[in-house]
Image (cartoon, rainbow, N blue to C red; front, side, top):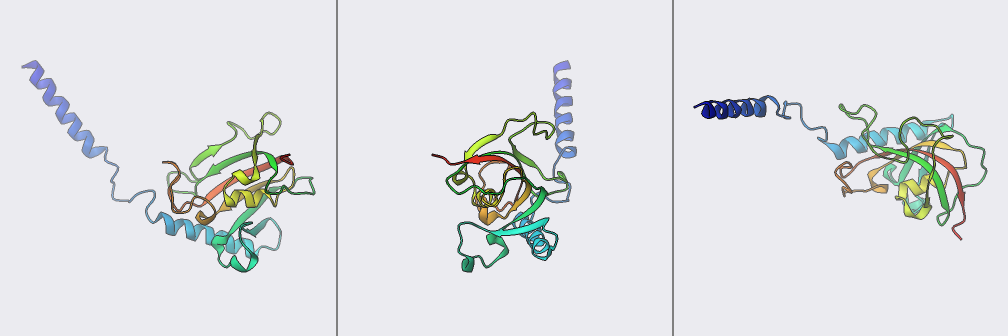
Length: 195
């Protein structure tokens, strides 16, 4: 008898939890209209960069496109300069770079700063205590490589990459939905010829 009461109580508790703990609160998903929201977010930043006269906001066409082929905002990256370095040269496609970076999605209700999906560092951003990661410019996404080839040693940029120059219509992992604008905080520490 005691066992039957215990089972009945567990069933009642589980039923209550299933109804009260439901994620469907009528407000929709965090990723509703994700493609449209990402395109709008990026296009607004692109227009801001195109209208900027201070040089803090910039836009660059993808390295992979001829000037005449870069006809839409989605063919460009947008850059917000956070710190100017002292270098005078930029890496080329075959160079090896040493960088610090952090990657986020666009802001959402649950993640006002954007969900962080990757990072080369943990904790506080302190260049003196962090070891940079190394990689060939050619090994990164088109938008990321485009930014690296415009940066100088010591530059720290926030780089906005539209889906077309990121992962496009594919989802590389559960943390990055298809059609995502990617937001990277990148510091170019140094670079050298791969040979």
